[in-house]
Structure formats: C-alpha cells, structure tokens
Image: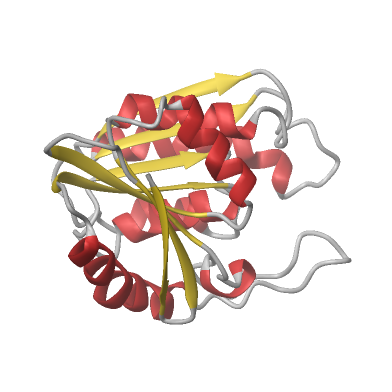
Length: 222
C-alpha cells in the first residue's frame, strides 16, 4: 500500500504492507520516486514500513556544517542539518507515525550519498533512530572523521549498515577519493562505540545499482 502526506512543506510517501501487526519503520530522504518504488518492490513490499521524504534541499539540510563545494559547478554546503533534524524528529516523524496503522517495533534512518552522511550525523544528535543505513555515504566530507572521533553517539548499541562501491574511491577529485578510507575509519569508530556495524563493498561506482544497494542495506537492518 502506498500513500502520500504533506508535512512541513515536504512530500512524504509512505509504503506499508497490506497486512500484519508489528513492523520496523525506516525513513529515507530521496527525491526519485521511481527509485523508491523499485526499492519497495525489491523488498517484496513487506517486512517494514518505508517512509520517503522529498523536497529537501540536500546541500543545505543534509550537510552537518558549512563546507566548500567539491565540484566547480555546484554550490557550497550550507551546513544546516541541525535545523532540519528538529523538523524531522519533532514534526515529520510524529505526524507520520500518527497515521500508521501498524505497531512500530523499531525506527531507522537510511540514506544514499549526502543523505547517508546525514543519517550517520543524526546518530550523534538524537536517540530517535536506532537503525542507521549509510549507503555510499559522503563520508569524505570535510572534518567528518575528526568529528566522529571527538563526539559520542546518542544510542548505546545502534545497528549501523555501511556500504560503498569498489570504484568510488577511484576518482581524480582529491576529497572524494578519500571515501573508502573514511568509511573504513567510520566503521572502526562506530564499533569501538558499541555499535553493531557492518561495512560491505559492492561492485561499481557511485551510481551503480543504487536501488539494489539500498535494499541490501535495509534487509540487513531489519
């Protein structure tokens, strides 16, 4: 079952099983509805509640602090994630779950690319989400690894899924070329903090089989 809501100027797409009682609920920021449809189909449209949030300015609200752009054609990152986290946890999540007909057994946040970085950042700012998925996350982000080393997550034992394409680090962009090393460091830091974490490598670059990679992460989390 698929339905829509409009909350805080965001279009919310909710995918729910047709029957059952208790399910984990996973939130994801994604603007491509065809891809989220594909993810839901790959997961056989069951086993969890899938909430996709659209109309989010990624450079502004998925970035944890201001940083310089990595490509000349793009804009600098505004670093307003803290502002958006309040909207997500205080408005979007409560309103969505007020409409869900099933009991929720766990709550998670997953993301791809910059929203994968955001999903990990949220782990350091709130205890609302206990399942975290960062697929091809932008963990090359300026000062991200030092931030992880000097801060503590809000959940004692979260479940965290990390993945990356094996060609993503093979780029001429010096910042983004660090992504594999940064993701490995993130895995080590999270494990040392008590997280149940896995890091998987997939064949291909950043844009290879994104829906399949996300579905793979969801399957491990739930």
